[in-house]
Length: 173
Image (cartoon, rainbow, N blue to C red; front, side, top):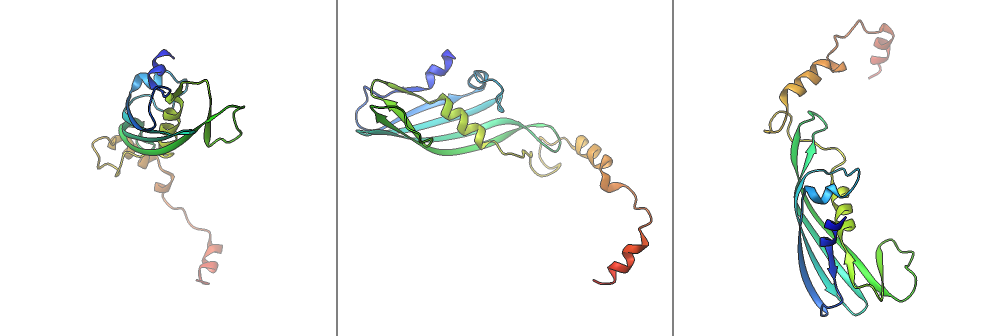
């Protein structure tokens, strides 16, 4: 967890206005999280922080590739990601608010941790169905696996004699 300390911004000494930060997101970053969907990555995270009197506005731009497994042919391929997100953090004297969209910072906090936000943004951006591209036409696609799946497919079974009761219904078309 000590390596995640590199993904924080100490905002107390910063002047009001915009400040830019850059982070490299790689395999070591995801090793810090148990049960991560992403294991290997080569990402660049650009953070623009606008410090105001009562809040911080954080704009994230994460770009690069992660290693993904194709759901069709099971081969590993690089999945491109281009993520744009915004997070607002407000300063408060009291208890943290009930709003999930806004981070509440206590007056005596002096830095904001970004590792959890970056991790969440990347995992949410991973496609639900990962496909390496056109079937058999990309350098990553495993053509042998696709051929094997097609040969075992239920759609390739020869048609048996159809039920003659359906023939009467087909006349209504």
